[in-house]
Image 1 (tube, rainbow, N blue to C red):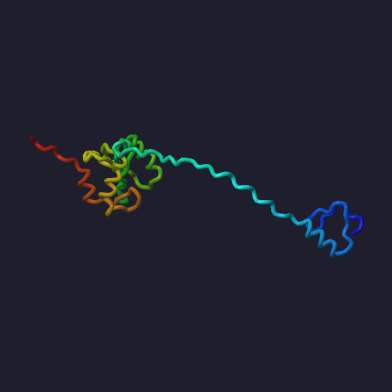
Image 2: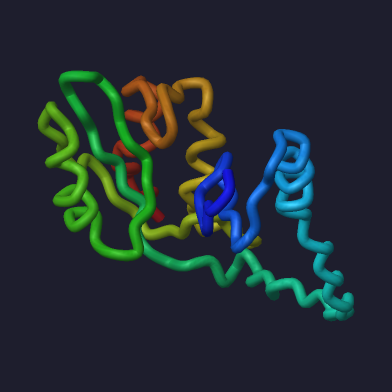
Length: 157
């Protein structure tokens, strides 16, 4: 091993020294092993006051259109909410559905509900028809939903 200058021995580079015996080589290899880096000091803990986002009152829930979109082949109806017109929502849904979809009913409302008994919400309709739920916002087309969307006659005074 005499005369070896900067040779690769077991993955370590020897610099300007030679080991005469295997014992010297073992000692060198032991001393050349990488020692773990000292742990980095932990950054100081800074107390930041926790500010929670302000919740909007339910009355301020976004207003828009609640729509009923029917898939006649699957006998399923999607009850959803759109801040835009329902036909815009249908335009985005149709390419993802094998069957033809059609809007069968729309009504003003909001997504989550409110304190007013006159405001219809998408979430409220989902709760009302939950026994007919297929998946997500899709429900089995049933007489109960059909009755809900049927136009009601105005009472005569």
